[in-house]
Image (cartoon, rainbow, N blue to C red; front, side, top):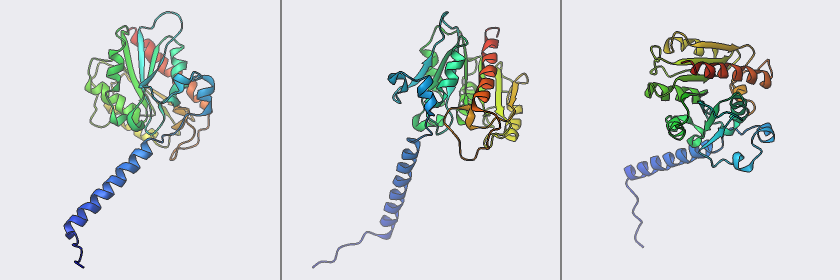
Length: 253
């Protein structure tokens, strides 16, 4: 019986590398497909319509009652967080008279679609003023969009977030608010302070005393974060208030 030929060692090494890469990619896709889920209150109070609660939408839109809005706000969700976890915040802002849109990101990571805002803006020609913003990685990618599309939006809203070092907008004609938590264990006060030179001199800085990272959304606790000393409801109220103040300013921009 003829002896089976063995593959050359270099072939076996290549097959091993390809197999390892395939396993890593598969593992990453599985990880990205299982983001932090919205808390039950999201579905009990905001996303009661099964169509709205679906994960198959490209984005979630929230419209105010009454007069059609002229100002819109696009939210990029935090990294590895289900985009629906920001629905209560979006609804609270929309109730103040604004169109608010939360975009869904591939594998729940805004880095894979930093230009998502462009499609939303193109779909709403009736909106005169736009702000783009987001939480954590989402805020950084929103800043990237603003940096790479000068003049297309009037405002940037950062929630526990800061721009990348190569996105210097210090000279931009732009309204900016940076909202952070003093107990944020991920976007720490030190990291927020380090971003001052990257943003316009008239940027509004709002530090929520006792606020942390996870309470910028409605998805529960987060690894690496510090416990907050204020309730999620109180932190959210301050987030909404500061965000709305920025949106109000765009009408005079």
